Image: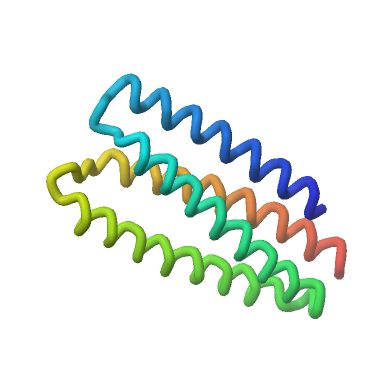
Length: 125
């Protein structure tokens, strides 16, 4: 299960990176560096939170809700911090559409993680 998750995470990372590159080519206001850093940060946070939640599920399958909630909270706090750094650090280059794209990226990674964790919990019960 971990192998499938890692492969899908890598594939999703590359596809989203390609879409980010296309967005930058279509509109130069989409900063390519911000899109890649945001994508990489969300992918890394998803990887960490998946393994934290999976360890909780392995220990006690009934802890699925707590594991997923904790993982989502971890991601949300880190993402809010990164958004604040982006908005404060790049005031003159701030682009709202970039944040909305990264919100969509966050939702894709979170959905993928929830699907894999629910399958893992189902197997353990």
